[in-house]
Length: 75
Image 1 (tube, rainbow, N blue to C red):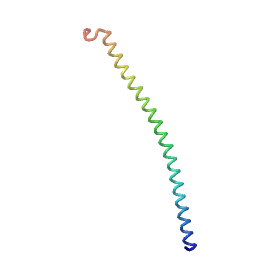
Image 2 (image 1 turned 90 degrees about the vertical axis):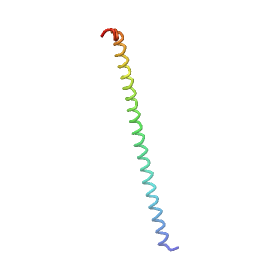
Image 3 (image 1 turned 135 degrees about the vertical axis):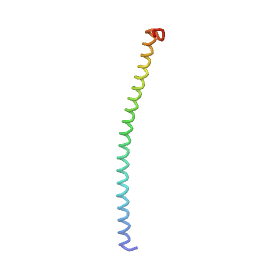
Image 4 (image 1 turned 180 degrees about the vertical axis):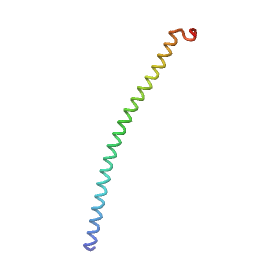
């Protein structure tokens, strides 16, 4: 094996190391973005849950008000 072959192999290894470093950095960025998106979706889910409860309570309140006013007999 000549010295130029060794230099080519060394450059190839350096290139691979650089690519692996880029992939590791990209993976870290994707992980942080995923966690951020997950937190936002959890917040949205909590708000939707509260909104559904509010709607159910409003319907229940309206139904109770209708019954207290006499229901269908009042019409």
